[in-house]
Length: 438
Image (cartoon, rainbow, N blue to C red; front, top):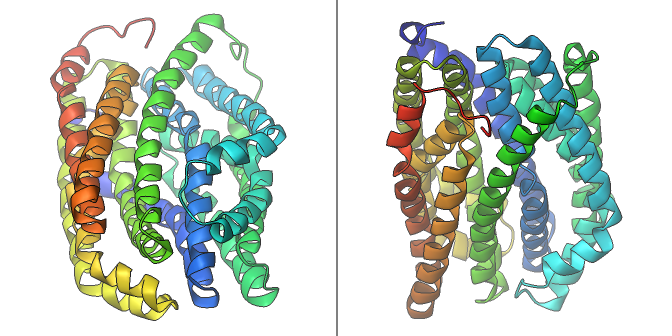
């Protein structure tokens, strides 16, 4: 494929299954929140919010398994190295499974470390811990699933990625309703339903990628393992830094009371849905830029950046408009607690602009992940986190939850500017041989 053949229609054909798959992923959290919002009070809703952020902080810290697998697989695909494409899948599954078992074994210690920083009251934390204890059993399945999704993206099998996520979300939704609305298990039922769904999705995913599981002679090649480690290390630091910003946002709401914590959690689900859906264009950019980088094709790389971003900006504007004009109806009809509902309605306008202003940083993430430029991602994320925390401390002290949201919006701009500064260098390197350390 040359740069001229990357048309908008082809980007859409690749992106739509990814966007639907991402919507299914995001709706896992939405379903959890909706079921709890309809059946519980603000304490239970806040508990699910705190626990989900804590769990996501843990799991998303290992998001490098998905991100590096996508970039490296796309580059190997671009270089027509089928053996390495398959070896990358197997490495990701082995690393993910091993790390998942370690998390499971260390969960009693991790639960204390993860929940200690949150300012939520004791009732919220007790229920949040029950969610954690149930959901943590899905850890190996989650991390192995990251390897599968990264490989499917890197090889352009976006239709199967959609099927994978539909299985996960479908099982989760059914079990949520059964365990919570039917059996009245509360937040623990939400966690148990998600954990079971994660194992079911893994079984389906392994069936889908079975062709890539044939024995690979270079599975433990030292040079390739070092390259994988280097890529993963920097992306891990980047992911931890960005996860810290979301944990900080949730905790900033918790310091102002349970109602604000719950209201912000509802709006954060809107943000998550938009980010997951619009990441479809960033994921296509990862694949296309990874292949272009593997071929040393600057022209194709630049075109992939431009075409995917144009479509992402248009889609982001549409989602922002839908949130602004229709989000109030969703909140009014799916949130039972009046105080949480009032907070969510009041701050909906802040949430509604994020799908549009978030596009530059989400797209830039895709560009640098596809080219496995981890140092740029790491440095930009650390800068963003420091400046965001400083902004939140200042604005929250003066303007309360309005300041919390203002700082959160500023974070997206800071993230785009700090990462965009590295873009000219990335384009220049696309014409040069790739360094041995990736």
